[in-house]
Structures are given as C-alpha cells and as structure tokens.
Image (cartoon, rainbow, N blue to C red):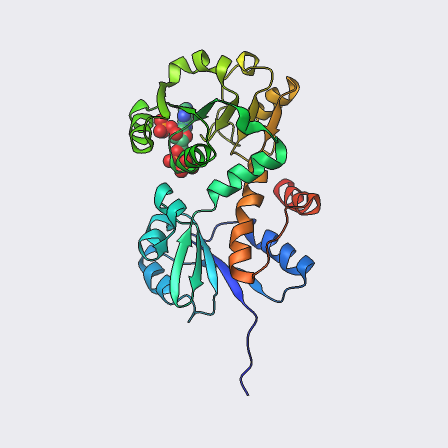
Length: 278
Ligand code: ATR
C-alpha cells in the first residue's frame, strides 16, 4: 500500500535566510485546514540547478526562491509574462510535469494598494524611487494597471534610464536631485530604495509637496512604519506599507501549490508584526 505524503513547498535561498514565509504559509495551512508543509531549504548556488530540476523528487510541489537564485530560477523554468518582464522568478510550481515560474511581487504590490488605498489608480502620474529589481516589478504593475505616466528617479540616473528604455514611452527617468519638481503632480509615490530601512539613512523627501489626495507606498518593512510613511500619515495621506505587500505577494504561491486562494487577514498581519517586533 502506498502512503501519499501531504503536499509541501519550500523557500530556497542561500545562506539560510530568516524569513517570515514559513509563518505566513503555516498560518494559512492551519486556518484553511489543509494538510501540507513549508520549509526553508538552504541551497548554495552550485547545488541550485540540481535541486530545482528535481524539485518533485525532493518532495516538493513548488517553491519560493530568494537571493541569490531568482535569475537562475527564471532560466531553469518556463516563466510567465510577469517573471519574464521582471527578469527574475520568486515562485515555482508544476503544470503537469512542466516547471513553471512567476514573479508575485507585482500582484503583491498592486493588491496591497487596492486593499489600503482603493481608487489609487485614478492617479495620472506616479513617482517611483529606485531602479533595482523591486522597482522593475512596481513599474510593470503600474503600467499594467494603466497609469499614464511613471516618473522614475534613481541616485544613479543611468539605471533609471536603462529601465525606462525597457518599458517605453510611459516611463520617464528623473534625476535624483530634481525629485521635488515632480512631487506636486505625483498622485502616487513609491519608495523601492533601501532608504528608511533599519540601519540605513532615512529618505529625505518633503511629503508636504504631494497633492492632497496622494497615496504613499513603501516597500521597506523593517521598520514597519518608515519615516516616509510616518510623515505621509501625519499629513493625512493614505499609505500602503511593505509588510502588506509581503503578505499579498505570498497569496499566489499558496494558491498554486495547495489549491486554495488564502486571504490576508488582520490576524495574519498581527502574527507577522509580532514576529518582526520580537
Ligand atoms: P532591489 O532589487 O531590492 O530593488 P537593488 O537592486 O540593490 O535592490 O536596488 C536598491 C535601490 O536603492 C537602488 O535604486 C539604489 O540606487 P542606485 O541604483 O543608485 O544604487 C537605491 N539606494 C540604495 N542606497 C541609496 C542611497 N543611499 N541613496 C539613494 N538611493 C539608494
């Protein structure tokens, strides 16, 4: 008699990162009454291809992928449009025998905005700070949602120009020194840089220059309330924080692996907040 094991997914990274993903997925498994597992697998770069190409043999129905494996994961699987656009995959699953990949940062960002600031997409102009991988996901999501003008500011202007070139006519590079010129028409301001993160300098930006109905989003979630979000809240603006995006980006992976679309509940948020503060 063969015994069927419950489905399990994992997070593949190197070195073994302290991640909130097990807490999130275990919460959903428990509250939805699904028998399943989620573990952290520390896999060095030289072992990554073997591990991923035999994911099911290793007992997994899918995986999240984090630093430094996201680009390799894309190359070793069949990516969807989102993973291809971002140039990095963070979620793997099987479609039949085929290993597929996606990037869930895009929907994590957009769904979090929808939850925190409904109507945010009435903004005609968005200002995105930073031009790394996270920025690429944000810009793709904004364009997909129909934002007309995305202004992209980065300390190293060449990176903003290169990203703008890839996305086309709706994305405009902005010199870091001239960001304040764009603020008065930015209906949405998004920080994708590491500024404001614990141990990093704060982001020096005057939220007083934003329009009255602007929405401010920060991808940083340590601390939960960055100086940018605190200033925006103090001005009465709607905000979307990095923890919200983290929780929302986890939804799709769970759905692909375990077959049910979970909800980002206040209880889940409290659980992860307590862990971050702990
Ligand atoms: P990610 O993939 O998370 O986006 P990244 O590629 O390392 O990470 O990008 C980090 C972003 O934070 C970049 O836009 C970086 O600006 P540069 O391209 O000029 O490096 C930005 N950043 C980091 N430290 C900064 C600082 N002190 N001032 C301004 N921008 C900063």
